[in-house]
Amino acid sequence: MTEHVWIIDGMLSGTGVRDGIAGGYLDPSELGISGELGDRLSRWVAEYENAHYYQFNDAAKNDDLDKEGVAIARQVQQEVPGITVQYFSNARLRKLAI
Image (tube, rainbow, N blue to C red; front, side):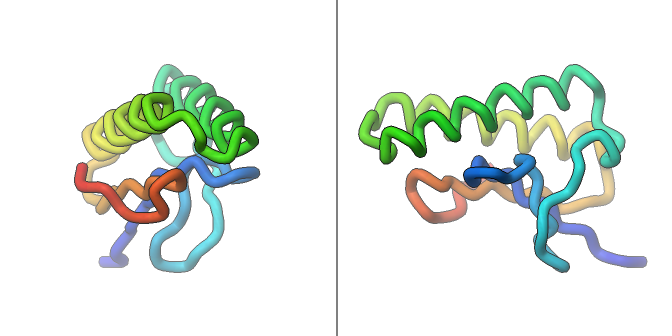
């Protein structure tokens, strides 16, 4: 069985879901997640991009974005069993536990 690792991140110009094995971004509409989660992911990526444009100067906003990102990662893990999901904070430039 092929191992799948998806990394949820708010990287500028990304889709929010990166392939942790092969690299590159994945299309959320092709991952088997609910439409509601896809919409949530899309809104979160847009908010993270805005924080990037402000150079992540608002620590409270960064915390909120990372909390939402971790929650999204957990929901992805619930909706798509059999994969490993991780979360990477672009504001902190490191992985955070989910």
